[in-house]
Length: 341
Ligand SMILES: *Cc1c(COP(=O)(O)O)cnc(C)c1O
Image (cartoon, rainbow, N blue to C red):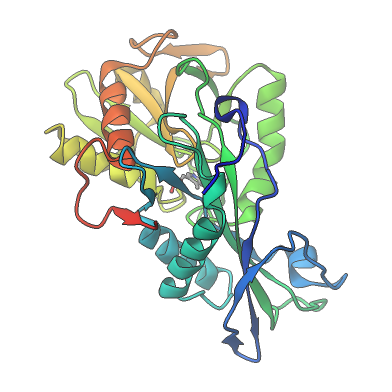
């Protein structure tokens, strides 16, 4: 198989139209058999539920070329399960786990020429999603849905090394108490776009959102979970019902505990204690872990001892170990690496 002739280190995080994508439709109470299509466009009725009341959920995962030349995905079973949880909360029919895994496999195989080679730092980003496709005007769940999975190659998240980020404590909330902060739905992103644009205008890289009930505890950014390192070399991650359960963060905790022998704790983290931590990072599929150097809380600056030039030593070790597991240079826990071809 001939790889696409792309400058893998320069492609950035952008959409490229690849060869094939997977589609399945839900109608009369059942999913059809589904399959691949070359058509990247969707034709919808003007009154489709997704367009009117935003009934949609999605996932994001990557395929990598390992050091042995295999194409693999990382813990796709957890994406499948999370998408079922998201769908249930949105009154949508869950797409079965085995079918989700099959769809991802078919899409990656059909686009193998788009999977960046080992050593390029790039990977194939896979986007499964589903939405209400039938007309809805009175407020209720739709009767018909479409599940799709497409993929696009993405470049290395950190070109020229990981520069620590500067965050601002947001005056907006990304989720409501007892709302939908814990599911992966486009609506959570729609409502945080304004905060995102405002933070960028003021020169910040990301927002730090606080718990929407009391605005006392740290939640997450718009698309990544926090991980802190204490001065005693322990890992702490915020606990809250309105945080998205990041697969990267859950994997990091396992790596910290079982590969690096560190103590890990999940608990509520107060905004007024973060200045006591030694390192701070953001976990998500896109960047694996991005170091945070500074948090600005309305004129008060909290600077982590790891500084603004490079990742702190613990976050670097976590990053190296997890990317090593994904690329086949470090032994993976049972079941984490799913070989496709
Ligand atoms: C997807 C997402 C994350 C990261 O989750 P991963 O499974 O690690 O990719 C974190 N926060 C939000 C809001 C997300 O949508």
